[in-house]
Length: 113
Length: 112
Image (cartoon, each protein chain N blue to C red):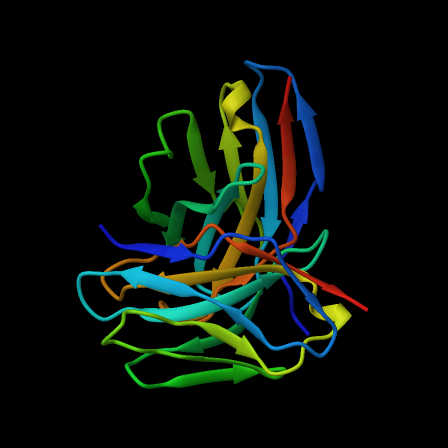
């Protein structure tokens, strides 16, 4: 069964450093998403990406964040200068059709020290 | 704005007990509604969904009915198992948007 994969599973970084979180969505999906979950809190939407551009983003997704689909398979989230409050579990998701089931990856736990 | 409210956990039950996890929503319009489950150490998996009023979603013995009059989508299961222990998230999606809006999650612990 096809699945969304994410690497790394855990990333530890120093405050102010850049991090890139990687995702491989399901191969024939066209819509891609990033969400995050701060420990003990709800899952929050960050950004959606379709047709090589951002289709929607939340207030959390400020200038420190960017997304890219550098090739036909990867989808990345970059945080330019990490802050302590960026520590969270980051989930990538993809869907074949807008509004259809979003398939989630296992997440990357980001710890900012 | 649009939002989802879930009952606070943890919910602790004995095996074979009846489960209800309450979920209500606020939305300007007619959302699609989802239940996702997160097993320990794993990502979110879609459990069931309903796209219009009075639809009933069901999967693996779980059910939820989309009630427009009470803006609710409560999750039920007649007889829980230890393997159902997980965190359950209610979510909504509006067709004017790309994002899922999640509730805060409810942890279920089933004891043998």
